[in-house]
Image (tube, rainbow, N blue to C red; front, side):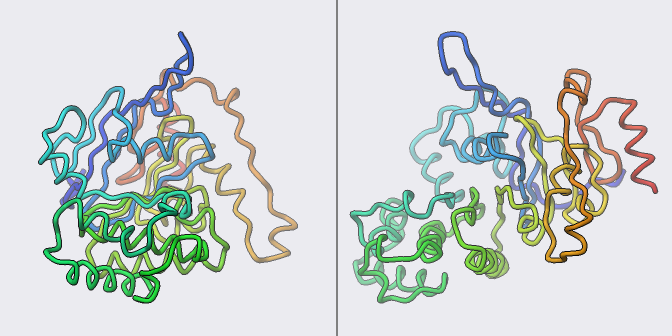
Length: 313
């Protein structure tokens, strides 16, 4: 197989994130996750609520200390102890946009100070005037204006608050942004505006995204490649178009069959595929294998032969 020549910006290797919920109870939120994100791409991560998507993003950015495994950013392991300078450099290069645009903004701070927080922490401005002008520039970049700088978060709509979250993330000129379900709390019409803004900023600033969501139609629109998660594991990974045209894992097929289309005739005849984890069985004898170049599925040897046959048809 021809080796991929693209630059790997983020490498997740056998990442595990286990939480203790009692004396003996351990929840395996992530249990052996492996994937790569290439510079300049949008990697979509999808799955139902509770599958470990958000935990993955928070572990990559070190909001959680990983139980096991590695996260490499530009070839360097981000886990473990770091000195103050290395941690500060890492925090500048990697930022996060949170799911709830209201609770992630301090209600007691004006927009000027919210957006400028990163500038202050990293010492990126030399005067109050430069600080103010930089915030004005960022607000205009995300479709707001300088008059908004003197307001408080409660004075904005949900879509505008998410734009403020994006402006705050952009303030330190990061290379990599984790967008953790950034549109799930927004109206459908506003969702499209925010996603289009993210795509526009990616082109202008050469950004790389990890886009976490459960809305598969929107993920397809913004993502170059998509990973499908189920209970802490990746079950399938492929290019966006390939995954939608040729889903192989039964869980992926189930997710895709649930996407509604604006076509009454199609909706009347659409058959929902139900995924039965008990019938599918344990993943103990399964591993993540490449069915065809760039298309990976969690499977055993028998299933691999079946998937390879399906991929050729």
